[in-house]
Image 1 (cartoon, rainbow, N blue to C red):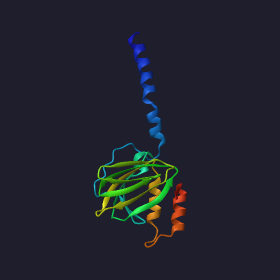
Image 2 (image 1 turned 180 degrees about the vertical axis):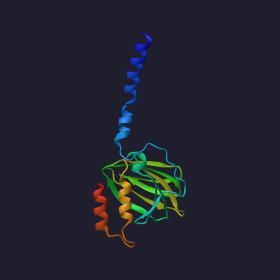
Image 3 (image 1 turned 120 degrees about the horizontal axis):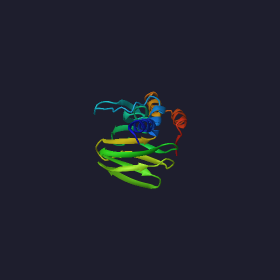
Image 4 (image 1 turned 180 degrees about the horizontal axis):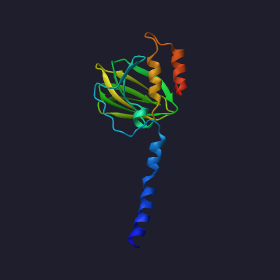
Length: 177
């Protein structure tokens, strides 16, 4: 093969390689820029979601819809009753304190460093136990549920209107059991 044939064939090959499926996906994800994002310890979108103190660190817009990352920091006694996600899997990692988790029929006490996977379609709940506040990192796959949390945080203070909570959660295919 002479030099001209090599350059022509290589240029064609490079052109094909430069349009990889990864590039096609990147272009089809909307506002996702595939750029690094640094979120400092005191940064994020802080919400009170019916008593659950959340700090949304990464949203679907940050991750191309792949996942949402939320830090939770709650007093003993705070928790969420049994519920089912039809669309999302969740991973909880306890950073400080103690959290009692129930997934399906199994309950377990989690302490700093412990992780639990909650698959979609399986009822689960959590509650901060012990004497100290608990901090946990919640990863939700795929992203989108942060929009539900934003809506729930807009409800007026005081005892929640359970009918309204159910309507909002229902829009995101989450139901209490």
